[in-house]
Length: 511
Image 1 (tube, rainbow, N blue to C red):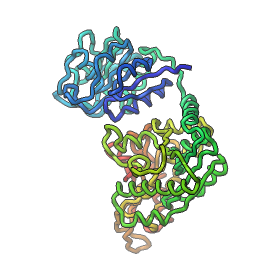
Image 2: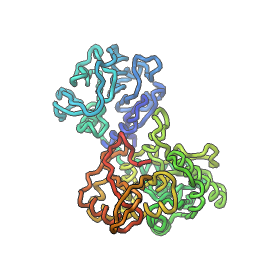
Image 3: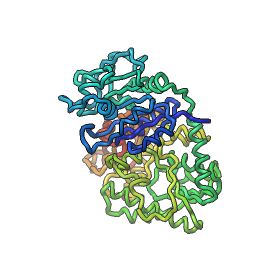
Image 4: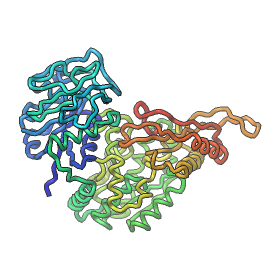
């Protein structure tokens, strides 16, 4: 079966993959290519439509990413977003200039709802802006279909050519009716039928993995989290016993986690699983280290070294599999994105890795898509909906140096917090929640005596893509129970705070 496709042409924006994800949510397959892709390759792609992404550049800067006007002569509908809108205007003879007043964040916008792009969209609307340039004069044949108080051409179109452009970002959560706009582009303008679903991705991925791996041996980096679990099962379905899963118990796991991982994957899924207990090795490497980036790099390198050693015991191993997902890649600064933090399975890989190839079957998926893939393959819901857990584990939830003493404190406190969230029946309403042991100590009073102990931070966020997030509104009575239990049941904590910062400006994890 030929699957209809939309091309997302990447001009260096942070949201390129998010755009593709939003398209896939509409049951239309999206494929991302860099702006350097040749016109013949694009022509041969038989795309139903093209989306120009945003980007940080100015179209009138000669060094900015561009494309030849040929792409607008393929007879394919095009939607330009932010920089992509400006590029469309520039290529077709419009004028792009520096805006008298830049717009960032939530912005009120007026939309002309007779446009196909804004069908079933409210005229007086809210969108997410992020620009310093703007289209001051649309190209000939275009009409303005939206404006704000600072942007006279916030949207434009030439329906005869199938060209549409918006200065704002319809793909982010902060543009509430963005999904409707994208649906209109896909179905009303491009004529898509919506024949792509997660089952298709899983089936095609397993088939492609089987062909790629052939009769080779594979080693999977298992952490027991959602991402590595789904990646492991996908490989297992593709090549069966050719896969050996190595679970590194580095001593930085949550309470009871090591035993749970071994029970589920060895018992329920009949996978080749080797549990490597190497807590002393990691603690020795982390001794005296406080910098979060250094901690991540050390853990990432040590992970790989353990895998290499286990591979030697197994015999020749051709591929290493990891559960890398897209937020890991984008935050690690791959491509044009700035480095936000290194992930152990991206930025922390040593250059002399001793495997013939690296396989990352989930690299193009976001967290919610990974969960859908897991359910599609039959992973139990309890496992699929486990709390996200970073590869470096509790090492990056302990501020400053990691010690056995701090690990014991955090394990118990985090367990109580997660237990009370589950008891309250709100676990599915909070996308990620955990405790952080800060490096701050404060004065307290317990049993009529003075204490000087650690401050613990609780963190809960709601998000659909983990690229942006808002703090979860956990009921005060639940936080109250958590606070009282942790202080009474866990030693060396005398103060508890709740993190009410969104992402951005903060990240979800503290380190």
